[in-house]
Structure formats: structure tokens, C-alpha cells
Amino acid sequence: MYNSKITGLGYYVPKNVVTNDDLSKVIETNDAWIQERTGIQERRHVIKGDGDTTTSMGVKAAKIAIERSGLHKDDIDFIVFATLSPDYYFPGPGVLVQRDLDIKTIGALDIRNQCSGFVYGISVADQYIKSGMYKNVLVIGSELHSHGLDMTTRGRGVSVIFGDGAGAAVLSREEDNTKGILSTHLHSEGQHAEELSLIAPGMGKRWVTDIIADNDPNDESYFPYMNGQFVFKNAVVRFSEVIMEGLGANNLTPANINMLVPHQANLRISQFIQKKFGLQDDQVFNNIMKYGNTTAASIPIALTEAWEQGKIKEGDLVVLAAFGSGFTWGSVIIKW
Ligand code: COA
Image (cartoon, rainbow, N blue to C red):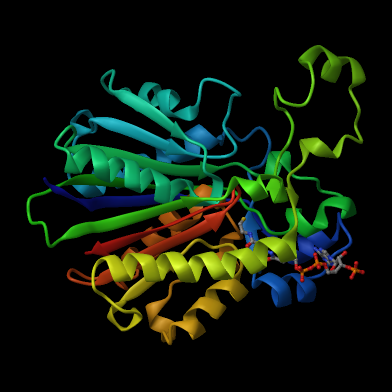
């Protein structure tokens, strides 16, 4: 058995910055409410027509990650792409990355685990590398939320939170079993599937011909729905559990954490976890203030920024943790 380690990281965010004040011009909200409840100051939104898509942003992040890994694109053996906002209903963006990076006809897998998508993706890549099947796996998380949000006052509880962007990591074979990804831990609880969901377009609802015939602009099922307080309460419990599960599996405690990179759902959730585990400010990385919640992209963007800023060094214990729609949640324990 091998271990896998992260050998390259990259991210890309669209250039268009949308502040809380910008949002308050189109929906009834204000900077104070958003900052107090979520910590978010601004986020990025793709400008319609400027060419950014979920796939193209993922490709831009991937190119940086591959270059930093020191590999050639044709050294990549497999692609894993996590998103809830794919360019097409099908096929998923994994194959579009294979095409747009112009690499060999390697396998491409799409992951549908929302805010936990990148953690699930890392876990899949890790298993392929552990088993010896692949040597280098590209994992991408990318989201284009802004085209699908309800930018009216009706949608304000959701629409102020989400932002666009992409992050990517290259995982490569590590011969030393004490280094790299030590373990991954995944969970789901489908009982709460509809508490954070986008019900349409979906084949479960009705015939596509009915949807076209109805063409109902007031059909809210085409916008994301979130039972915010219920999600918040579950998130703080599951984040704590899955971090402790990961640490316990490796005979570690919160005191061993050098850097916790939580999914950027809400600054208040990160602060709750930080306090609960007695971590200092320099042991938890947050950038939700600048990007909002970018779902599958949030951990790889944050991890890349933390690494770029020199906050993650060789030998550090790095913990990734996510919770989101499904509900799904998970953690990754890494010896950098
Ligand atoms: N601006 C101003 N007021 C807003 C608003 C906005 N953007 N969104 C909602 N409100 C109002 C509501 O209408 C409500 O008003 P009322 O009391 O007059 O009915 C009030 O603010 C409180 O709304 P509520 O939804 O209860 O707010 P909250 O304190 O729960 O905060 C969230 C909302 C979404 C920030 C919070 O619930 C949250 O972060 N949840 C978890 C998100 C998460 O972790 N997601 C993880 C996976 S993606």
C-alpha cells in the first residue's frame, strides 16, 4: 500500500467582485446583516458572457496545480471533478476537463456531494493511489452559483451566501506511509436531503415537456433552498464529530492540529469549531470574507491560499473538514 500526497495546488476566481452593498441594490439586505450572520464581505460572480464556466474555471485552477506539482499534463492518470453547478445536465465536467486540458483518454469521474464534494474527491483519489492503480490524480472543485441564484428579496437567505470560483489539487504517490494523506472519513444522512437542495431540474418532479409547457417564472424549485438554522445546527455537530473521528483514527488530538481548513460555509461555524477545539487564530484558515461559500471549491481555494501564504509547512498536521447538502460530511487528515 502507498500513501498519496498533495503535490500541487491552484485556484481561480472570476475577477468581478460583488460586495454586500452591491447586493443591497438589487435585494432587500444590508452589509451589517450579512457580516454579522455569515462574516462575508464580498464574493465573486461570473459576468455573463465573459467566458467563465464551471469547467473553464476548474481548468484554470487545474493548470496551476499541475504546473506546481512539477508534472506534465500527460502524467495525470485520472480526473475527479466535484460540483453542484455543472455546465451541462450531462455529461459532467470531468470529461470536459479531459478535452480542454487536451490530455490522454484517461478516466474522468464526477462527484455530486456539494459542499463535501472536494473531501469526497480527495478520498476517492487517495484510494486509487493507495491501491497502486494510479500514480497522479487531479481533483477539482468548481462552482458557478451566480447564474442560478434567486437575486430577489425572496431568495436573500441563500443568495447572499454563495460565490463562484474553482480550486484544484494534484495527488501523487508517496512511498513513505507516515506522510501525506493519513486517512479520510465520509458520512451521509439522506433523511435531511431536502433541507438544503435544488429540486429542479430533476426527473423526480415531472415530465420535462410539462416543465416547458408550464414555463412558470414563479416556480421556486429552480432555485436553491436552505433551511438555514437547521443546517447550521447540524453543521456544528457534524464538523466537530468528523474532525474528532479523523484525529482519533490517527491517535491524535486537537492539540496536534497545525492548520484546520474548514469548508467555508459560515464564519460563525468556523469560529464555533475553533473555540470548541481551543485553536488559535493561526491554526484555522478562513477566507469566506472574500469569496462567500463556493461549495466544492471552498476547501481547495482556502487550502491553496493558506499554502501560498506560507501557513502550511512540511511536517504540519493539516485537517480538512466539510459539511453540506445531502447531508454529507467528511474529513481528511494530512501529514504535509
Ligand atoms: N438580509 C437581511 N435579512 C435577511 C436576509 C438577508 N440576506 N436573509 C434572511 N433575512 C431575514 C429573514 O427574513 C428573517 O427575518 P424575520 O425574522 O423578519 O422573519 C431574519 O433575517 C432571520 O432569518 P434566518 O433565516 O432565521 O437567519 P439566520 O440567523 O438563520 O441566518 C443563515 C441565516 C443562512 C446565515 C444561517 O442560518 C446559516 O449560516 N446557516 C448555515 C449555512 C450552512 O452552514 N451551510 C452549509 C452548507 S452550504
